[in-house]
Length: 207
Image (cartoon, rainbow, N blue to C red; front, top):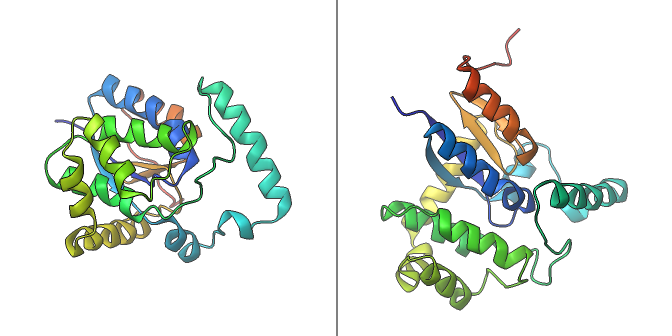
C-alpha cells in the first residue's frame, strides 16, 4: 500500500523552497504519495502563537539570516537572502498549486520553478503574468490555472488546508505529516527519511 505524506507549505516560505528538492528526493526514494496542502501562513502563525517576521525580536531576525546562509550552503543553493519581491501576497500563487492539483496535475515542476523565481530570480509571484509564464514553462495550462486560482472553490480549499493544519498540529511551513506525525521544518527531512527507512510507527505527544 502506498504511503502518503501531507505537505503543508506556502510559496511565500523560504524554508519550503530550501527543502523542496530534497523532500522530493525522499518522496521518490520511498514512493510516497504527496498530498499538497498550500496554506496561508499569517493566519496559521497568529492562531498558533507565532509572529510574522517583522514582528519578531531583532535577535531572532538576525539569527534567521545566519540560518538561511547555513542552509543555502548545506543544500547547495544560490539565492538572495532578501529578494526584491519578497514578501508578497501568496494567495494567487498558492492558489495556482491548488488549481493544478484539482485538475489532476503534478505541481512539482511548477513549484521548483516558482520557488527559484522568488529567491533566485527575484520575480514577483503576486503578478498573474509571471505565474502564467512559470506554469506554461512547467507544462501546465498557465492562463487557465491562474484564472481558476481566484475561484471561490479554490479559496475554500485554501481555508480547509488551514483548518486541516491546525487539526494536525501544524504551525509553520514547511511541515510534512506522516501517519499523523508532524515533521516541521526542512531541517527535519532527514528525520522523515529515517522514519520511512525504519518502518516504525508514528511518535505521538502522549506520554
